[in-house]
Length: 234
Image 1: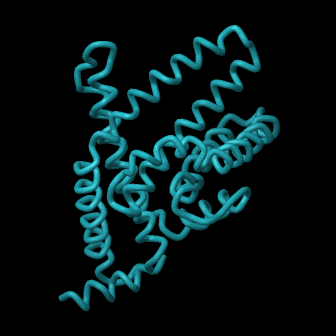
Image 2 (image 1 turned 120 degrees about the horizontal axis):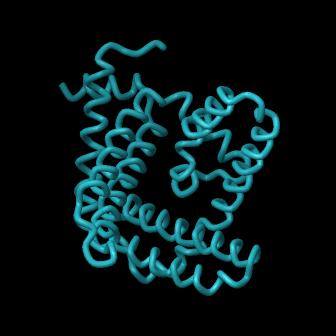
């Protein structure tokens, strides 16, 4: 890989911009992180209602889960695009990215089913497949709410984006993953787990905002462009 001179400094500057802006936006809109608690309560009610319905009930729970994820992504998108959440738009968020999420989920499920049949006798290859799935489709959420792609294009574009930007994308995402994990592991649960769920929601919100900002800058600039920006500022 041909990395420009000063790449480390350029990447650290990129992280600095994304993390500072992400922290500012997350603090300004911190109540949004608590919505995770409401999603959990909503899904709990849906599971109780759907439990007697068998297979159909499982499908209802899946749809409700995807709708909550759509709402969550719409809140992240709102903050990244305009800097704040307009609460009157929250109800529409449940359907905002529902079709794209269902399509992407179905395509990934099809890949998993085919791989499970083909790679059944090969344990090592199955592990490699799951790692590849995790790596190359890692940018799917950002492509759904920040990109303009649908269907199979989502998978192709995620593969392309990761192939071009993996060396900048994953270190920051590993750090964000550690932040979320530590929050869940070491904070007291509180009554009914509300404390840890609420705090985890705020930290997760921050992580997703940073991911979105990082995705946006990596997708709209090149390594050479970031090098030129650094030199022009010096």
